[in-house]
Image (cartoon, rainbow over the protein chains, first blue to last red):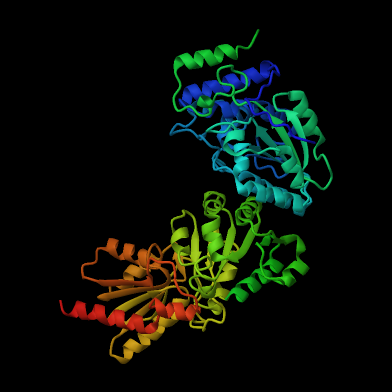
Length: 283
Length: 312
């Protein structure tokens, strides 16, 4: 397959259903409470996470260290707002914790921490670490002949890190078909587009060349995500990669592809109102 | 010392199925028997230290005890963030066995000389740093590393280092080992510098000076109590390490002594590598001589400090 890089801002017209909008509204409420957060990075992840937690991952919120659970790592730790919303909804953490985001008395910080947040398998935040943890988990599962699986979400900016590609080589070498990587390919990093900052194209081809079985999906299409995730491993003896084409800030017109919304360290009441208005959940 | 350490990993792994070994791209035949007998727990993952530390952390969080071996500089400098975050932040049970602590790789130059490894890791919360003096002490240490909570850095000497540790003294992680008593001066040493420290004390004895020697095979957690207790009894304290004088054993001793606020005055000096990258090749011994890591220099340093102490 020949990749055809889009050099302008990516587009995606996939409509968001009621649930996707409500999850984003929860994220906005967290940002309002905490006064800060990676808005665009979280919005780009919502569909991946909801499909994983609604339909794919095996877990028990009452016993978050259950031996047979699937392991999930948000390697792009800065997208944690979306993760926290789902962990609260599924019962890993009380909803009240969401409103203490980044507060002294809360357990939810700007990056997720192992040992503090039930359901978080590894502390992430510095990019290029999560996949190696995932490879370790997957190697252990193979060694133990255990049936649980490992899912890791990486970002495109994170794919600038050499350590990520070390982990990719290692996963392929060990034929870890119990490992699936979802790449949030929104083509925006902090400074600019991935094309400008450090071009990854041909991106899916790179994963393939490094030994993964690869599919590309619309990362905001619940149907496409479900279909792909229900079919992993795509090939026996190979780890799977799902390159998810997404929009940073998906769901709110003035946030989409807007790098000023990558991270906010203050947010006005007016901005919160505008965000909520666009994410209005129709009755 | 390296051979003993790796042989022990094999022996311990035979008894404990939680133990994994990961190498980077080590010499052919490394731990051949381990690989043959326990192939599922033996990994050789290439020149990719960052990933190796990360997967070791993943295995450790699943209940495994992972021993990693490669050259010390690559474990400390190359993948520092993985050690800080994946190992220390997660308190992962991973043991980093660093080959070539200090000047062992003198012929290979500054890329391979671990002159700053202790300083680098001393700054990390939850890290334990050990530097045994010889192979016998390594043999006593290794069984303790199995059930120790959190990451450990094990600094290896060259191999064939003379045996100076005492067989009857058990290794206790975090505890100093008094090697000899003396009321005139105290030498604090770690790793293979214990030998020149003991030789220096013997030499000083001939000159009529009673010099105590305290061996610190664990540098972190630092045995502040022992160092202060021994330092309190003498007017002169000298630290000796095969490491930069910045941030290693000497710094730890200086910090302990400074904060002890002794009633009696102390004369103190760190003996170690100056703040430079070694500029010559040769052997570990020749570089040690070049930078004054010798019994003779220790003797001279102690004598000079005693003179200033007495002249006061």
